[in-house]
Amino acid sequence: MVSFRGSKMRGFGTFISRPLLFLLLHFILVKCDITDGNAEHLKREHSLMKPYQGVGSSPSSQWDFWGSTLVTSSYVRLTPDERSKQGSIWNTVPVYLKDWEMHVQYKIHGSGKKNLHGDGIAIWYTKERLNPGSVFGSNAKFHGLALFIDTYHNDEAADRSFPYISAMVSNGSLPYDHGNDGRTSELGGCSSEIRNKDHDTYLAIRYSKGRLTVMIDIDDKNEWKACIDIGGVRLPTGYYFGASAATGDLSDNHDIISMKMYQLMVEHTPDEDSLDWTKIEPSVSLLKSPKDNIDDPTGNFRSTPLTGWKVFLLLLCALLGIVVCGVVGAVVFQKRQERNRRFY
Image (tube, rainbow, N blue to C red):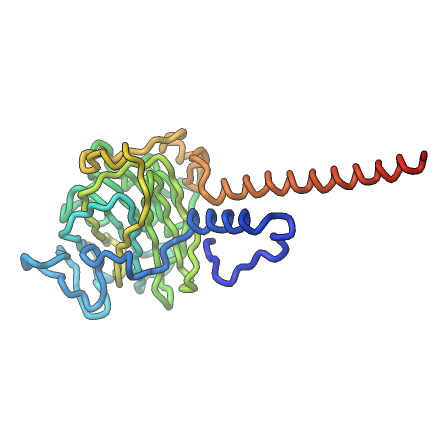
């Protein structure tokens, strides 16, 4: 859980000098912070917010929709609680940011009882837009990133609870396999009880310096909990954000309340800045194959590089170890000095 409101570190300065303390605090806050909605980073041309102005089919529209999608003053309903419906909404403006964070406020609800509802919502950052298909209302083959909020268990042999949130990066050659809930191409995921809540649920997708992080808030407490953290991800600029949903024999209301896009102010090396980011091919460099998720019920990769907070903890433990050794050494030295005095 990432939440620094009201946190204190009493007694920490007893062992560490004040400048070093400030440095360590700055490190963990920068590395672990999730944007809390600071307006100066909000990119309105990529954001979908009430009262949903700029949504439609006119040339000046920034969002376009398809299928069963219904735009109201309170929400964008991708599908109603009816069978065999598909709908989507897509940003018409390509994203040319290297580092970004998308916050999605959504609600999935319906009259279906446990395990009698479906299918879910997908959040896309892809080269293609308004491309209908069999995967949550969009095409199974795509270029870019997809995040699936899957509410129906297709693969009954798999040992995981639903609803389940997972991520996939594709260069167009590997389709999403709906029959096994995308496990062969999944990068990571988590189970999340997001359906039929009395409040809205939230999702934060961050992409920065090759790392994809997904956080969730399903309790409406303004506290993010980790879901996915994957390094070695390469995504180009110039792609589009969108959301889609579908129902089959089972159904649900799939509502998007808002999609807020934030620019992350991150420094890059001169070599990174000189790259043509529009020519990057979507890919992931991993020490573990996505197919290994079949034997991993959690769906998460354990061989990814250390994240910022892990590095901080390692440094902190090492520093505290040095301090403890120094204190012990000083005590031992003092006792030896006292013992030596007894002989004189």
